[in-house]
Image 1: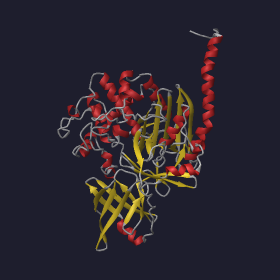
Image 2: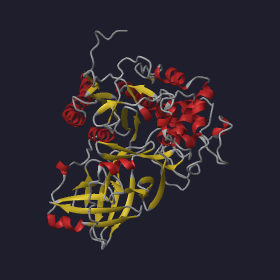
Image 3: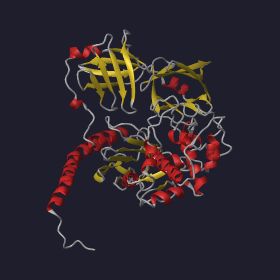
Image 4: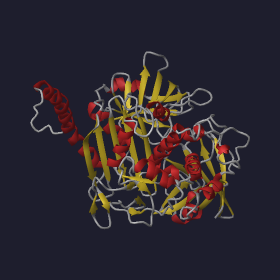
Length: 552
């Protein structure tokens, strides 16, 4: 059949133009703003990123920034392939739901149905708990992963590695991100399908959706267009090696921004699971006490500037990623980077907000409030979540600081509301109350906490003192908080660095010769000496005093 000689009705042409032209104009207006944000974060001589933004099913922005290989000075291209880390969990979740639709499992099945000898300590742990991070199973990435990072392990060997750890809590009582839960889900997929996790995802998802650049990650194989992975340590270094048998169904997949757009499009069209089944993945489930988890099955259920959205990030040796989908506006944003040093999460949220026409406030959009009016907000505030936040004023600029942490500028949105420019949180003060009451909203997690102004004096800033290098060297070592969880103290460029197992590292600053504090959050480390040797350390955090014995 040919349409060569047929003419389209004039009113149909006008209808098409009505929808296409505004979207094209909208994209053009945003392009320069997106360019500015991305060039500022991903420099032309450093690690890079690829990004795709789509609206109503059309790609309106698709670019690359920075370098794919720093050593060879290779520019990043939009089709470069990245490890996507925990975005893998979406594929694992949908694979489980596909098997559910086939009648091969139930979300309420207990895990002992598939792993009979798994020690559940008399508790009922279901597939739902695994999908929703409410199982209580300890995440193996908090168990000194560096010790086994280079080991190739089978799924059963890896499960044996963590299965005998005590539960962190009873299933459903709390929410705690657990890579172990998604690792077990991968094993369940293998037992039911009689295929490896890799083969199942390749055959039933990637091939079906023509995600031709997506695959299970392998370090030894030649992968076309793979972007090199980096981390930072006094500048860029090549990322540490990680056997891809370890992230498995929790974080082993590789993809491109375009393939991930195909993935989201296929989900929207119900190409893999039914609409009502997909809704299970997008649901904000509750704990046993009714509190929301802000998590579905492989997706976070956080808003984008008060508009409901689903999103998730990924972080793995050498790579970070973030994606957001706003169903109401049919807007999709995904950013992939080749360094675990420069998370795209906040940038993706800013871009998604701009794409739906509800940009977050910036310093440029703040209103002006006289200095005299700003003074009434100064003080120490206590919140129902036990947090202490301190508001100070310097040169007509208000600052907020959580006790023991770093201070941030806050800007007036109106006469009683102030926003943080980079983390999307805000204060709303009830200035007519005596004492002043305040609501703190963390828009990264949808958490809300109420506080009240106290009569406590604003604490003095901690002063950093200089400690001789020969003393700092005495503190270098590994301190055990509990089996499998240590604090490592290193000396880098004459600075002490503290890193807890599986967590980010922080510089620690001396307030005395033996006591050091962390600027980023309220915690101090005190080193205990005996006969001029460090024998242990004491961690002070959140009114807790934790002893850590020196191992070496």
